[in-house]
Amino acid sequence: MIKKIIIKNALKEANLIRRSNRIPLKNDIVEKIINDVIKYGDSAVLKYTKKYDNVKINSIRVEKAALKKAYRNVTTSQLNSLKKSKKLLEKNETILLKRLTGIMSSENGVTIKRALKPIESVGCYVPGGRARYPSTLMMCAVPAMIAGVNRISVVSPPMKDGSIDPVTLVAADICGVDEVYSVGGAQAVAALAYGTKTIKKVDKIVGPGGLFVNIAKFLVSNKTSIDMIAGPTELLIYADSRSSPRYVVRDLISQAEHSQDTICGVVTTSESFVKKLENEINNTLKSSLSRSEIISSSLRKNGFIALCKNEDDGILFINELAPEHLEIISENPSRIASRVNTAGVVLLGKYSPSSASDYCLGSNHVLPTIEFGKSKSSLSVLDFLKLVNHIEVTRTGLQSVQKYIKELAFAEGLPNHYFAVEERFRN
Image 1: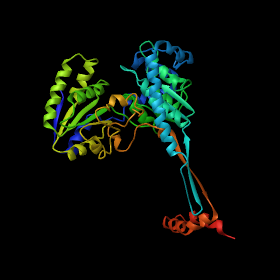
Image 2: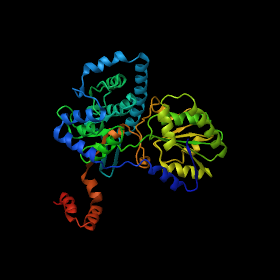
Image 3: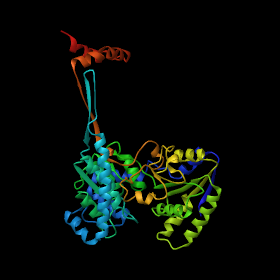
Image 4: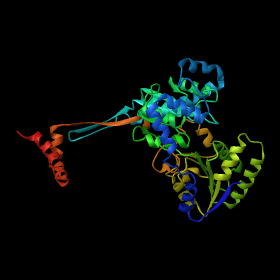
């Protein structure tokens, strides 16, 4: 059911796994959708919603009354859970923002203040389809709210009756978002990037989506900033001989239920654990599981167990694969974690499953996939801020660097740069 890999060359094997989930960044269909939205606006958005979501809607925007009405279809427990998740996320994003506030350096008459300025407007893409993602709405909207973004727009594919999942609408309401649109796919991305009569353009688009969404985000990124290109979700678990096969299998299943293209794997140095794990996987998949068809297909197509000869090779494999989620369920998880540089999030110990981080630990679950963990971090308040330098120089300060400016300006063949400085000291 799940393939076994003997790691002889960690870099080569990691790259072979990656080949299966590359994102093609050119698509004629997506290009046509974007061009039609630019040309025809709302009518193109409605047309492609009917064509690809098989839903005919009359109004793109969700009215404020519908946001309030959604509470009727949400249980008290669901509401409390949304509020708890929001509170924890707010706390962590606020701590980060405070650490970055008030940064200033001053030396020899040169003062630089780092001013944080929020992006004016943001569009949050919240996926739909076979699952619903109110948690993703919060992961996108809360950091934007903490950053001070003035306008937050949410787009999400409609359900078959044309509405949006009520829990998602309530999540929008408790996050203070009242601009919600029942559209998804490339047409929603195009509308956010270029604007239509109903949907105002935004300065940045964030949030995960399917293939067409990611291609569209890439294609509009020369017009509107984006957070990242996101592939299918990923989980890699580092386990040793003392790890619980039951915990590992349950965590693999929890990730595999997202979609059939999810990447789920285990890396270990223990042959005895591999045998235990294979037995546990086979036995568990024979039992009754929700979303079993998706899980089985995902593990069969993209699941793997990587057996490494030693810990060093295992860590090399992890850093090359750069998984979205990395769980370390081993005897000394901190030691392993200290050597990992590329994972989107690192979860240490048996009580830190990736499924918990998706909801209610205060961390953000919008994470880099398809190797972007090598250069990107999870979505955070930083994605909604600009760092603007305020520089003030005294006469003495400018004089202290005058000769260095002269040397560099003349070395670059730009003498007028220096003459503009020299002019300040003419009598």
